[in-house]
Image 1 (cartoon, helix red, strand yellow):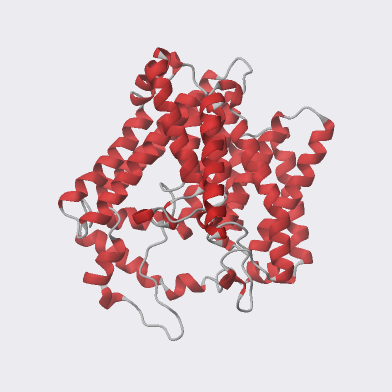
Image 2 (cartoon, one colour; image 1 turned 60 degrees about the vertical axis):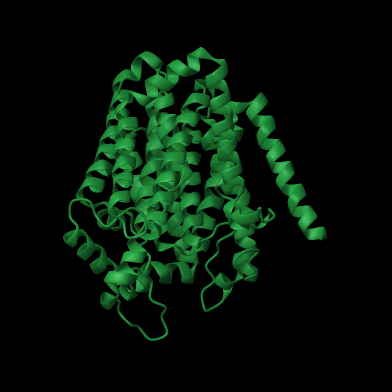
Length: 437
């Protein structure tokens, strides 16, 4: 009884915090959401809500509701917000996202599981509303705030990661500590998702360093960078480390300036030192290909996804029904491996989209990427007066690339709220008259 009262107390406290921010400082809500996504563990903080169940509410979902409610309220009160809504709905990125959602909604007519497809469509619509709400609430003087929040939340999780790594005592999902290798997850549902967030925090660190002009803060950022890299190493996430390497190369290509190249070079030195001093990390890297055991054991998922795509090339099998289709129509392709539980859920974004939505889904995804690149090019062209909006746009673009690369091994691309926040923040860098993209 006491525990239930505590859960209700935490829920009411969090709800009150979100309501207060939505009323007094709505522009910080998207940044709070960027921090709240780090607390997957919050699903255990709240009480069961009747038929919804305790797993249906988390801090991130509470903040999302706050963003939607606050944006709706301001649309009602402020005519200029309604003008901003027209602007964002008319931009090419929004139309591309709506095309993707429409392709998913069309699959309702032929899906094998109407309920799962409907849930997938509703989820995408809610995330699209989050994208709109973030754009409506965003202010130009707060464009660095999401980077600051993600950076410092990542840094705050470093001591917990060190504690779990040294003691093998996990505060959540304790089964991850079992076995020969303990994969640190901190407050996340999975170590690789934790690694993804740490990479986002490292990108944020580089962006903040670029805009920093104070020597003391520069030292703090360097120490923070070292701690984030150490935490990433503790996760033992090969996909996270590979993602970091790719996005650092991309950052150098997009921002070939001394202020960016120097800290990236420092990351290389720190990373080399970590590899040299940690036999376990070194072993994980040296056995990168051999260590892709999960992929080898589940390579049949690739074959299944490809077969679904070739069997249904134009429209796929239906949004959100890969697993159901696998179990009912393609189960004979599953490889039986002793002592290994065979997976039936695809964790690769491109394969999942190809199988579920076919060529139409892949085309819609390509349109989204084309729109993002177009936005980045427009920022570079418009950024001639020293405002450095392009550099901020690169930061958010790199966040999107990070999520996309990571999602090829862990899924959660369109499902990640940081993706939608990043897209909205990229558009918020434009003035309304410039936003006809």
